[in-house]
Image 1 (cartoon, helix red, strand yellow):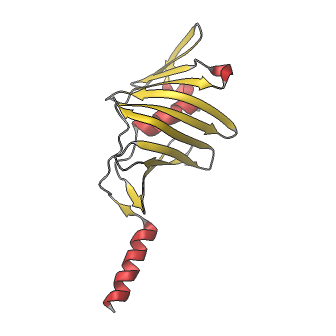
Image 2: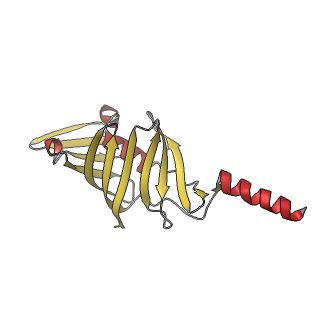
Amino acid sequence: MKKIFSVILVLLLAGCGIKNANIVPVTKGIAFDCNVTYYNEVYECKGKTDAKGNMVIEFFSPTDIKGLRFAFKEGSVTSSFKDTEYKAQKIVFENSVASFVYDVLANANAEVIKQGDLFYSEGVTDNFEYKLHLGGTGLPIKITTRPDAVTVVFKNVKIK
């Protein structure tokens, strides 16, 4: 009887995921490259966050928007492209891919779930439910959304 109970308990824990894995999301004070798929569009970006969660992200692909840069700092955003700069409250850029990445990284949930060898944190932005996939050190690996509209794959993530 004990063996059956133990097997059932292990299966339940493995199937449901274990909350409070000893991993903490490391989303502040990092530099990264990322590929963003937004519906059918694909973007390549470089970004960095500081210790307070402020973020700068610059697009390198597609060529039409190469050099487009967003700087998020304490509720405001500065966007620049070529010789034009625009400053506004964050709400103006609320539907941008850059704003989504910023929201997820700035508000990463400390409650990390372990499912098999995977670690993730879940949350909600104004537009999407998301899952922030983490490595064993807590650094971001990928963001996925429900509905399946946005995927962000992080590469070369480094602590600054």
